[in-house]
Image (cartoon, rainbow, N blue to C red):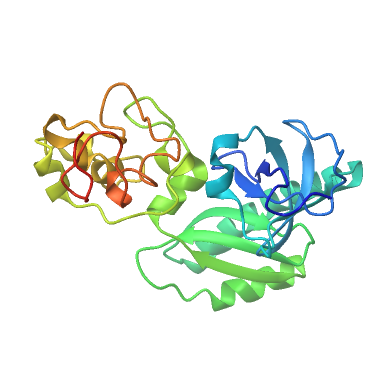
Length: 266
């Protein structure tokens, strides 16, 4: 097998919505034929999972290559039994979502159930939800554990994470940034809109999540017509690592200066 630093990476999507993750080839044979759309079993921080291979961008391999000791590795090509098991898991997730909704209403809990995920090894069910504050769901967990005979985890997420899970299209007509290239959510304030001389109409500044659009932050260096490696120009993004992850908002500029970092126009 080739050395870890030179082994070709494998891009895998674990869900239909969201970014592809990069995995090391693991114990796959060097001559293994991998094609976009193939199902593979991978190892992530939470254990094994199954996903679909997608095309990767070779120019970003250096940036996205996991450390040699990273647990993110391809375990094997998925077998028919693996695919059937995942289909059964999806059916169980749907049933768990339905039952959890009924029990949430029964207990009158102030929470909104977003998604249910079952671990590939069947060891647990994870329930993602949003809520305005803390929720006492201890009784709910006991009833769900009794119903499904497995470990139950409740994870409270924010409305931006909810939008990232569901996906969709922004008012710009493009897929949501959080489902394509953004790696984290940074603070966004109305001051950023003012600095760009944008209309302060809340309906125009809010994204699908109901919060201020993330692009208000990473387009900020483009205010007043300054051109650089971000996404403010109509020509799109020239930064191969993605806007927000390598533009002026996080430390690096394109050919133009932005006034917010040490790079000057040339």
